Image 1 (cartoon, rainbow, N blue to C red):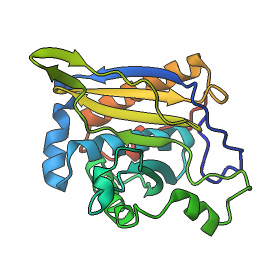
Image 2: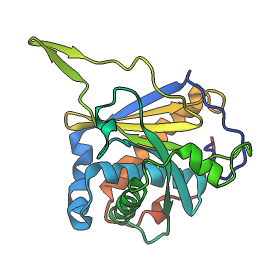
Image 3: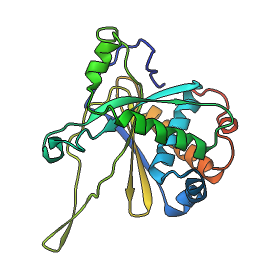
Image 4: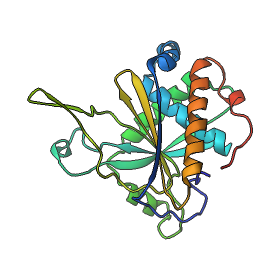
Length: 232
C-alpha cells in the first residue's frame, strides 16, 4: 500500500524499479474540456488531480501529500545547466465529498503556484527544518510527475525515438504522465522493496478504470465515487 508522509516507515530509494503503464486516447480525455473551461484549469492539472484523487481513494485520508518535481531553473543561470537541478517538494491537497474534479484541479493549481515560489529551497533542507532527518519519516509518499517533453527526434530527416536509460530513485511509487500526440501515457514506477509486480499491475488497472470514470463524470462530486478504503 502507499506510504503516507507521516507514516514513520523508513524510506529507502531504489533505482531498480518496477514499471507498468497504460494509455488513455483522445476520446477518453474529451470529457476534460468542459470542466477545464469552467474552472480555468488545463488538462495536466486535471489529470494530476485525478491521480491524487486515486491516492485518496486508496488511503481514505482527507489530506493527501504528494511529491512533485519543480524545475528550479526559470529566472536563473540554471536555465542553461546541463546537470539535474530538479527539486521534488511536497504538495498538499485537502479532500471533501463536495469537490468535483474541476474544483480539485483548481485547488491543485493554486497549491502548485504557492509551492513554485519556493522551488529553489532544497527538499533536504525542508526535512532538516521539520526535524525529519534520521526519523524515518518522509516529506511525502507517492510522487506525481507530469513530463512535458517531445520524445521524437528528427535527425537530418531521419525519424528517431528517445529512450530513457536511467531515472532517479523511487522511494515508494511514482505516477508519471505525458502526452504522446493526443493520447496520454501513464506509467507507474514502484520500489520493489514495497510492491510486487502483481501489486503494480492491480494499481495500474484500478487507476485506469478510476480515471476513465472520473473523466466521464467530471461534473459530479469526487467523494461519492471513492467508496471504501482499498488495500493491495
